[in-house]
Amino acid sequence: MISAERLTRQYGSFTAVDDVSFEVGDGEIVGLLGHNGAGKTTIMKMLTGYLEPTAGTATIHGHDIAKQRRQAQALIGYLPENCPLYPEMTVVEFLDYAAELRGIPPGTRAQALRDAIAATGLAEKATAPIASLSRGYRQRTGVAQAILHKPKIVILDEPTNGLDPSQIAQMRGLIRDLAKTATVILSTHILQEVRAVCERVLVINRGRLALDTRMSDLGGPGRLRLVTSGPPELVEPLVAGLGLVKSVERLTAAEPGHAYALNLNGHAASAVAPAVARVITDNKLDLFALHPEQRDLETLFADITGAGAPTREAQHA
Image (cartoon, rainbow, N blue to C red):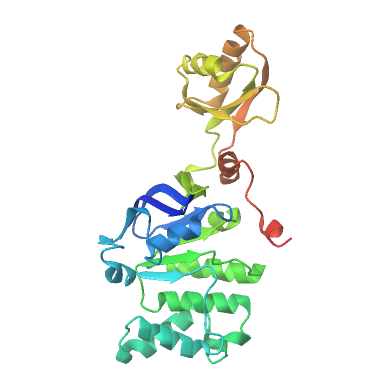
């Protein structure tokens, strides 16, 4: 299990990661989702022991990454964002070097290399110089070095960044295969990546954990969107007094007036909406909009960050 408790990282007066806590259980596929610069890479570097937190702790299967770094790192396979490789080496030479750094015994090293090459589809490029590889094959080589020692945890930073559609599909398949025997954490700023392979998503916004939810919990009409002329100090107690909603969230409204999200308390939207409409109009407030809101990942992300996540097409535009 992975546990992050109040992780914080500051660079002078700038706080890159601010008081982030979460736990990841064995066998989960978890996506860290956020815009570029949100703090995802910094969190991964702290989890893997490559960067010390300013405050907070991270533990890997009970090993404190700061106090028991070698024991913790032995359980982790890590693909950094820029996939650092030695271009003058062949794929096999690089993986053999990585296996030696990992302390894989000479007697089992050849089999470890064969397993990693087979898992990542690198057989036809095994003797090719890394400098001659496409971006997709370089990413595969980076993943191969991360899984040489059959780690319990695989951490991948932007694993599909820069890949073409066919390479993206291959990488997604590889991630699913890895998840059969390991816990997988991947970071991305592309919504499609999370929807395609993750069971759970952690949304990071400006260094803070803004949302932690399972993908299976998304998709239903979980709340009503209300736009009215009434200010929060008037609307919130009126709506809460109905006893039909769990909570009232203030939103940034593009329309006239004030916008709110009404989180439903087990009641159907069709039952709650008329009551809300009555209480708003009975108090002489203008009602501009009242409708169910689909709680999909894109809507949540837009609410949290104030802007939608870029699509794959926008990323390459």
